[in-house]
Image (cartoon, rainbow, N blue to C red):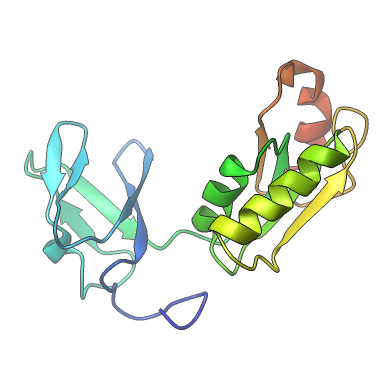
Length: 165
């Protein structure tokens, strides 16, 4: 995948979203070595590779799923700790997404920066801010807010205000 926003038929190792008839979303990677397991059924990756976005595939239980590419998200993370969740989020959003992380402790923010650089590599789409997200979130039009905090309920009102609706 050369482009952060691939087009055309699905390719091996590409992430996909499978949408069931109740509009529940399932994230999977197109790994030809293993079938995708969803709700007790399996979907062959070979049934998806080479098809276009919006195609319908059926599980081994004959349940239909629409297949889409995940959109690249703007995500705010609160509480970076050592950076493990930040690495997972950076992988999930890809190079086309943006991650803004808030951390109260400057030393944790610095540790996370070092760990992300060491174990993930360069992340130009990631910003670490020292501050209390419970008091203020500067960003607007955010797709997701991830609260990895001991008291996440203190942030709830602020996080709702910044989500893109």
